[in-house]
Length: 114
Length: 112
Image 1 (spheres, rainbow over the protein chains, first blue to last red):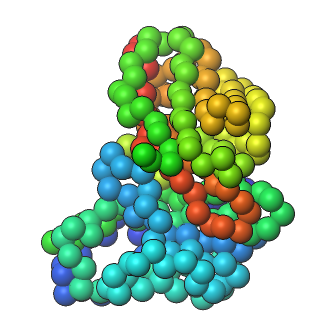
Image 2: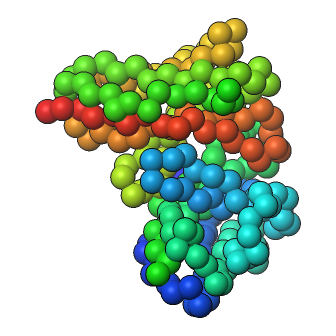
């Protein structure tokens, strides 16, 4: 099974709201990623967790707060977002070691900030 | 110069045609190469994964890597309207770097 699941599929939130995106995988992958994708653009890396520890933060504004509660779950907490943050948010996972670099994506959460 | 270059298209072909999609790259350290298919408003789906040089075939799809030319290709045989999507190449230098460099994607339209 190479499935990464994400909830919710769609989210509309106001600029003062707090919401969370959730991601889950059961492939035993120890690296999990958050990407942001705008229309007709490739995915843009935001955060990487390796063994439940934050490994990479691509200078993402603090209104995005990631969390990795365990090896299967990844959350992205959202607060005080701006309309320009509207995008498709993608979760992905991969193995960490062993020379295998296949990265699997979830279906994404389409976020609209009003 | 971008690390990975990919023609954005759109590329329109008739049903049944052989499709060739390509990416060039500049970083000779890249060893891991992936092709993703992405339908509109959906997440990327991993189609093909290749390590180092060579060919890999899976059904109607063939991935080729030419490291000497820094060039990768995805061939789709007997293309179907359901293949209409954006195809993204992605590559990485080493296990554990967590950095995947994506091409901009090629939009493909297969006409019935």
